Length: 148
Image (cartoon, rainbow, N blue to C red):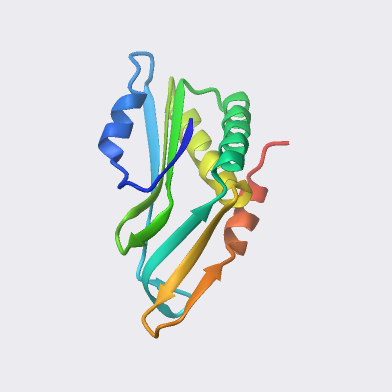
């Protein structure tokens, strides 16, 4: 259900893969590269991942979400490599019989992916500097929403 790619993400094609006549609801999240973070002008991002472990942990996250918020289908694609402002860095989509499960499962999946996957983000700034970003806010939010 989780895949990594260096290619551009096509949300329309991914949404079509989730279609199911039994689905009454669909929810998606698209994470885009923005031009500012913590007061720094960002020119681009670079993502690195340890893909074998990311896939294993991603499967665990999808299984947890399916137990907690029964859905029909879910997908996630995360980019690696160099991304420009406006690029889609991550996409999560969930189809379910009812909208509540779709919303909640989508939120759980993206929050847990941000916390648990071995994916690292490096920001490249307008002033010529760059730096790896630790997403403490992502970790705090993701853990608060975890099922028990």
